[in-house]
Amino acid sequence: MSFDLGSIKRGPDLKPPRIFLYAVEGLGKTTFGASAPKPIFIQTEDGLGALDAARFPMVERIDDMRAAIGTLYEQQHDFETVVLDSADWLEQIIAKEIESTHDAKDLAYGKGALKQAEVWRELLDGFNALRNERGMSIILIGHCQIKRFDSPETEPYDRYMPKLQERSSALVREWADAVLFANYRTVVKTTEVGFKKEVSRGISTGERLLYTSEKPAYMAKNRYGLHESLPLSWDALSNAIAGRVQSAQPLAA
Image (tube, rainbow, N blue to C red):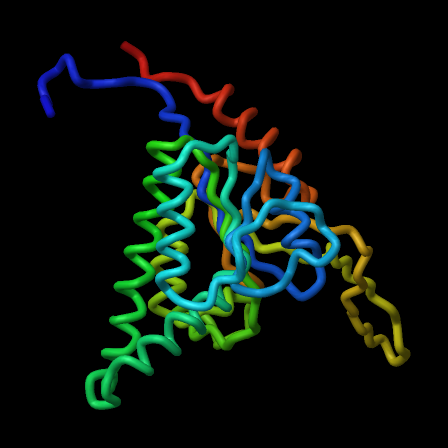
């Protein structure tokens, strides 16, 4: 590969997105994935229910994941999106298989987490190949948990985070073009309770939103400069990404 001046490119380098979506229970994560263009599901849990979507057999081993990714890479098909449902159930499969094939002493002192991370790197590289060479969008779906966050700037506080082991979570978040947290919109209502005191309570509006940027209450990011929140739908997200890319100006010559 040449790195002379003739190899320099300008403007946005648009590739299919790599999305990691995590959310509270029952919000519509799987429905979001099923609404992406021509999806194929790699299932580690039975989350499709009545949704009519193409899917591989249920993943039970790491080799099943390798086989599913390899099939999409090597064989001809018209699928445009691969959806992993879900990342945290896959992590359980990875952990269980590593524990069953290694002595306890080989997994002590954080070595088990390192071995899990090696598997995650391999699988994420496989997803990258589907994206870069087969032009597929990638959606990883996950559940959330509430964990204490020790900030160096403030008192510790609780926040929503992906339900993954810390090292695995960091790898997936770094890999993704967008880490999106989905939840119901909450508004704060303040009422007087007497003696010049007020009480504030969060009230859900029932509206389902994608949150795209980091806040104290949740972990999120995106590489597209999206609005802080969007409706929870594939169309809303893809249109927002397309709009941001189209508005991006190439560097001046």
